[in-house]
Image (tube, rainbow, N blue to C red):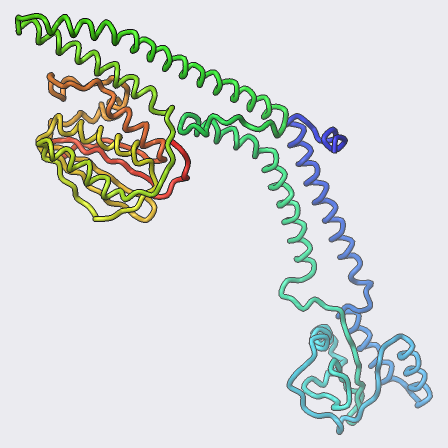
Length: 443
């Protein structure tokens, strides 16, 4: 096995060159075999053309024989050549509707000879199935028993060999190129799925040409560095948050001791805002570090529960859709994403509708509000962390611009998509599309 690996070129250039060379050599070899077959065909004594020529020649020789002794000598020579021929009386022949395949093959070349008359449609009842009868005179004929190795198929042998050569070369080329390119496809897939799930951090296998192995190793190192940077960032912010909680708690206790309401209340509001900002930021950063298994969930019940929760606190949120809709998802993460979208809607609109629809392969969730809406030019930017549309939203908004970012991240990790559309005549529509049966992995 070690010697075989040593013989395989390590460079992708040499591997592709070798594959092309092998394909060309195979094609040339098959072409030589085809030409050899073609040149060998005329020499075969079992071909229809050769057999037809023998039938014609024997018939002419028997016709021109001048004595019974000469006919007997011809009969002995013919039998020695392995061909069965015997004279028959035309009066003994009977009509025939079925011809053997070999007989039909020889009749077509015999039609080119005007001096030979084939008694087509007649046969000797005591003769073999594959018989051909030619006329000698008004009362006699010759019966030939011929068995030919023919191709009983619609495609001629030459065309069949050509097709075999072409498809063999094509199959080898496709298989060999896929063997070279498959590791590169694995690298592309790993780069595309990186960050979408914890399983995307698994190291790539070292296989393929030398250049692809180098790319795989570089990608593994890059992903490890990125993962380390994300972990360091999360730990750093978690430490900062932990260290800030103590002084924030002291500041809150001291602020609550202030008797003047006009001074105390703004301080408490700012402290609450800072605390919420810290908690939301950490929750956003830690979201991909807590994988949970996927499971089949009744999406309709999940949406109805979210709508009921908002309705219980006084918001006009309604559900529109089927009573049941099965979908494979992470229920905790998906509930959080939809809750963030609905919470964003109730902040800026008085009436919110959550609609569910879709097909057997995808579910569509659309959250519509009647608020001021978002300009179409900012529909992509609102998914950026900490982005706020101050001109389109209320100045008294208490959010930090993380809700839609978290929702987009969760929807994408489910293999879905989220997009914004302007409502008519006003408002905003947030459409989320989810595959109903994604791969059941932890997200």
